[in-house]
Amino acid sequence: MLLWVSLLVVLLSVILFIRQKDPPPIFGVYQQPGKWYPLKCVIFFAILKLRRVSHRKCLFQQAQLLPTTSHAVTEGEKYR
Image (cartoon, rainbow, N blue to C red):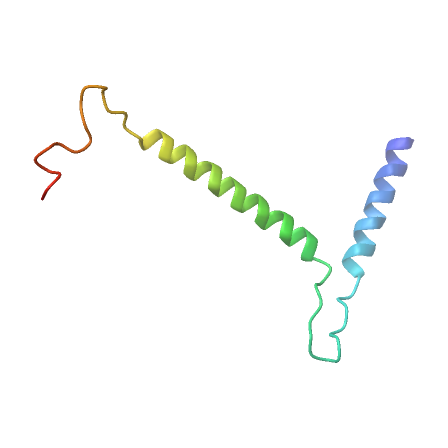
């Protein structure tokens, strides 16, 4: 019974949220954030974080470690 009541409350909340109108522009010119603004911010923040993590993971996999006896630049290449 509690499950049905909670599902009904969630469903009614979603329906009321979808039916909301966007706020009117201030002085008829300046747009205000709409009803979807918080959801968009969360989604794009998550996308940016996921891309950053996957990019770091890719760079870590591509990194090549040099042996301790070798140098990244040899003496002859230093002055070219």
